[in-house]
Length: 197
Picture 1 (tube, helix red, strand yellow):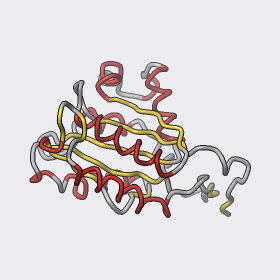
Picture 2: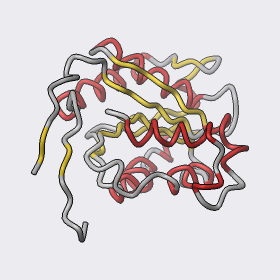
Picture 3: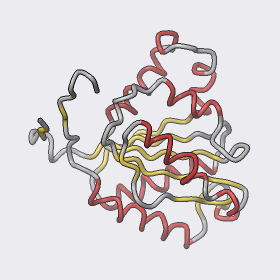
Picture 4: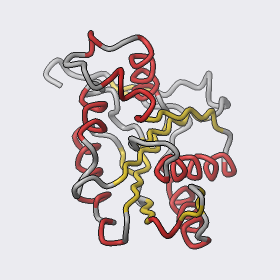
């Protein structure tokens, strides 16, 4: 049976951004930041940004979640309890990076069920835009997350000095966020799972 808590309906939306970039400064991080800013203009949010470049050294050597330091464990808990995820990766050899996948390998299999996820990616040119549909959407489909209708892809020419500079990209971001609003719940639905789930 599903139930919705009404005690925290007025609290800001917990938004966790994940930038899969392995460098800084980063166009991918700039894109995530701009998407979160657009969300903040449309509704009250409590934002948090996770940068793979920062946690990567503590993440890369672990082969089980028990081996992760508390700093990375805390970031995983933020991912697993977010009201909304904004997830972006640069294109690496036609996909996301191995370290990006490694991070989500540690996320609980059922902890993102029904969590809205706004997908984004960056690449050198528009030729890589389908990474959102062919790579990112199936990954979050596995988690039974709600991947939002419009993803946001940006190429190198959309940025100036690691800031989003293309007005058309800013319009696409605002449209993706607006289209997402009806699918973002103020409070997650908690579903009692059968034993076989």
